[in-house]
Image (cartoon, rainbow, N blue to C red; front, side, top):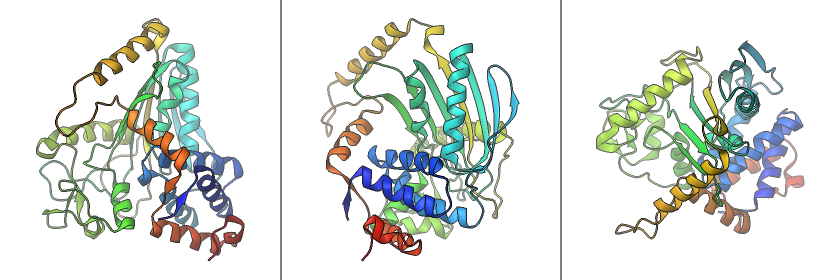
Length: 351
């Protein structure tokens, strides 16, 4: 697998997006947030998805330079229609607006519908902690084909339905919690496919509802399982609530339309800490709490206890210094796209 610097990966992603008809400013946002996922160690949401986004542009499922429309608005709430624009662009703008409203009104919320995939959720709540706010976001995929079976079910009926919270602190790295409500994000199955690896037991069932570790089975009628293993009803419950916030509250609905395009619905909420506590006191208490957790003696098989978000922070430090390993299969797709657009030489991707 080639090892690539973050700057070069960003340059490649940006150039491919522009070649596919994406405006420069939108390509800047998408490449920055995509490679940000690689930096955090979430390769499933990184440059591996750029070819997918370009494919969706080609068939009209994503519309570069789409208008960003406020459908309903109050001083504390907003309903945004993304008009099938890039989810990264639509949601970053929606989060900025929600942060500004919370700054004035102490709390604010927003729903977003009709947009492309928004990538790694943490990118958006992390914007709020820089302004002394707690933020959360949930997302689902509208009525596009699903990947997750309900607890006890043998067929997919839900999306991976992620949820994320971020909290301001004085820690070296941000404290946040970003997870799929399924046993794994669907993108991690794609990474396993690209690397020719099996997935851990407990992630997948095949088309007959039987457990499997073969990542190919997901695309052959199989399904991801909800988070929790034997207690998967907990992940199932969380996924249901996320679907209500991101699918029903946004008006996207539920269920599966086999021809439905990927349509990330989002619910965003932002809370201004100083409306509840002194911000400096709160940030120090969160910091002390994180250290209290880290001071827990590690159990057998563990070297230390991490606070939520610490692993991603360390991973980013390492990858900024040492580069990012990209699967040969993914690298090959990027090279093929660059050749298709006549920019392989410019990007150093020519054979």
